[in-house]
Amino acid sequence: MKGSMSQAAKTEIDRFASFYDSELARTGFRPDASSTRDSRIEFLQQTVKRFCSPHLSMKRASFSRPISDEVVVYVQTREFRDFLRSGGTSVYEVILADNTEHLPLDQLLVDPITLGILIEPLTSVPTVPGCTGPTPDPEPIPVPVPPPAPSFPYPDESTAVKAYQVRVKATYKEAGRIFPDQNDSDAFRHFSRYGYSCSKMSEPDAANKHIAELRKDLGLPPIV
Image (cartoon, rainbow, N blue to C red; front, side):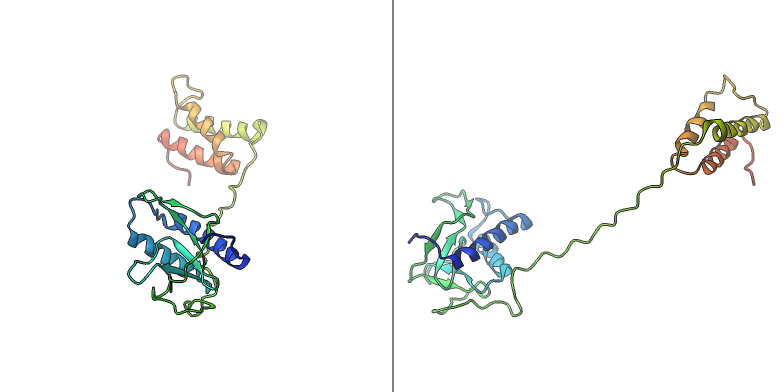
């Protein structure tokens, strides 16, 4: 029998509807044509168990019928909500909105923990000892955020960059080469890479790094 739902039942079943929806997303389970009745019953049972409410149960139409794979009952008033709609086909639609009915008195309430029949009249459903509500998902482990990379000002061209140029010329001279050498296509590389490194490290470190690389390219021994 359809009708308006009591506020207590509506509040609890609305809470369960949100939890049911989140469990579908969390587990990836889809109660569609590819699922079986047993898998849908198991999913509903595990969801009701995990929601851990003393007010909700599953239902069974009779001892000769299987447990419902779609109905959750508010035991105190026997109000229930059907969470799947198939219309007699194999295409299932998840229903989260209010579609309240009252369970006929000849139908049975099912303990979501044991799947046994509950003896009425009931004021609550047995739950797992110590259960106080829906089991929260574990808190995600925070991912450490690396500190921002240090930034370095571009060196002054009239002092630091000219000093680096003097060192480059001296290194070429030590190798018996002239600088700039128009036949040396790699000469510019030592300046472009030096400029880039100055944004990642201090200018003295950048200069020393690239003078060392230049000495290696020119066949000179490293500076000790």
